[in-house]
Amino acid sequence: MSGAACLLDSNILLRMTQRDDPHYPAIRAALVTLRRQGTRLCYTSQTLGEFWNASTRPLDKNGFGLSVAETDAIAREIERDFEFLADNREVHDRWRRLLVAHAVKGVQVHDARLAASMYVHGVPQLLTINPRDFARYSGLSILHPADVKRLEQR
Image (cartoon, rainbow, N blue to C red; front, side, top):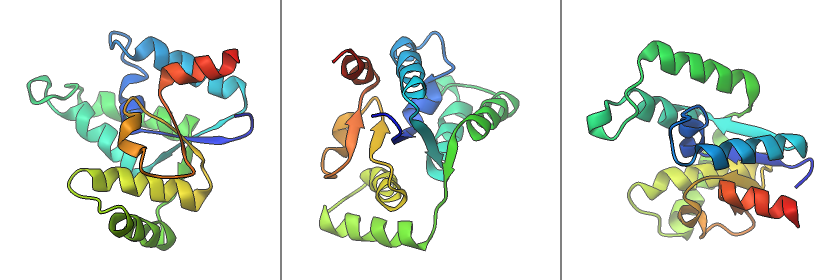
């Protein structure tokens, strides 16, 4: 995995600073390991938007209940520390082809957009707590945070 790039799913961005989240230890360890291996950690406008949505949504609406100021502070850290993958026409066109090729419906259109961005930007890896959501996209390495530690130990 050395020298590669890895897109961080919004569920990773959401939990990487939430010490009380059950996924936090595995996410933290995975990010440290990937950095140590020289992996470029990336985000998109979509993942940052999904992060903002869930961060500012009230707790009783399945959100994290953070204020705009708290969310903005974390978003600035994400923008500072990780590489931005820009949206462009090529990403859009690839996304549209994926939607049709894989008969994508409903909320899965968002995952298809991330896959399109990965293909266009040459980012072969995605770190997510929901690997099954991306199983249909060939040629991409979809990693759960716990997988990163296991791969390093080989």
